[in-house]
Amino acid sequence: MVTLYIASMEDYAGKSALCVGLGAKLVSRGLEIGYMKPVAQKTVAMVEGQPVCQDARFMKQVFALREPLEALAPVLLTPQLMGMVLGSGEGRYATLVKQAYAEVAAGKDVVLVEGTTGLVEGSIVGLSAPEVTHLLGARVLLVVRYTDDLSTVEVPLAMQRVWGDSLLGVVFNVIPAGKKIFVEEEVRPYLEDKGISVLAVLPQERILLSVSIADLAEHLHGQILNNPERGDELVENLMVGAMAVDSAIEYFRRKDNKAVITGGDRTDIQLAALQTSTKCLILTGNLHPSSLILSQAEDMGVPLILVKPDTLTVVEEIERIFGHSRFHQERKIVKFERLLDEYFDYEALYAKLGL
Image (cartoon, rainbow, N blue to C red; front, side, top):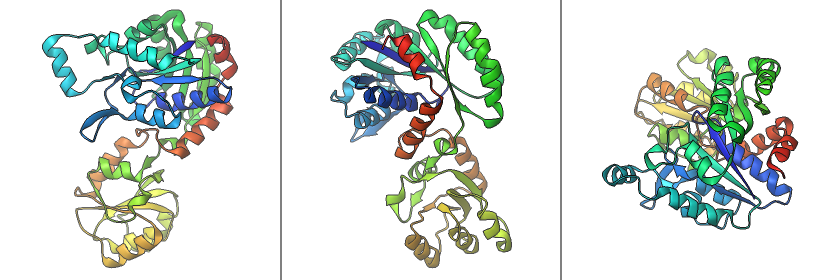
């Protein structure tokens, strides 16, 4: 039985996506897989008054896992738990993780362990990334999301010093088109000369950076006025409607699958946006749309999101979450699995894992 810890040093690097993609590939080879997220903090949400790890719940659904959520995500770093730890010490959280791991690993060929972000998260309960990998005897696959040229070299080198021979390799993710040759032809040979295998260089894909309409509404504390069943639709582009109406349609035709942000009183701009490939309209200033817009948007299946802030504030807020949303949509899963099929060196991974 093999345990593979998926690590990253930054948020939204692609750990969940890699767990889904690798898990699906392993299942297709006839292997039994398990999944767990020993420590969850940023992905914890309240469901029916109880804290739940969203990633664990998602993986349970995707892979039809039999184990309860308490085993898949045994330690939830809620404010209440952290208060208990600060008041009475670390407790027996490592034992809790080992017990959960034993349940998850029973009868499995491979257990995918989704790690925390960085090397610090989880330290308060003695379950930082290095501590968990040591506790479970896991091999490590590092996911590095492109931020700049230097980090593509420094992060893998630093993690090699942390994990040594346990580091199986690195997966570079969200590589801009203009940087792919640099990573392939300069970074990859340099790292491999240092003993660090590069198992994939995955290009940036717009669909994987997209945000669902429901996530936009939640992030903006907005109200979806119509077509709430379209909440899972993905928005790939963002456009601001603040121009003269004469040029609006031509402007909006430049991008498909977009969210258009405009004042709730700009009926002319809203009508122009509805004549193009628009996923939703975000109406700012807490100004309700006219009955004409409501009727047309309802007929066309385009949700209207009513928000309180002004247009500039909304644009700044949305730009913070593009490329930083959870990997819980089928279109994203399918696209990422295709990227892995094209770019990921599965044979090298199997050899390193002894599969």
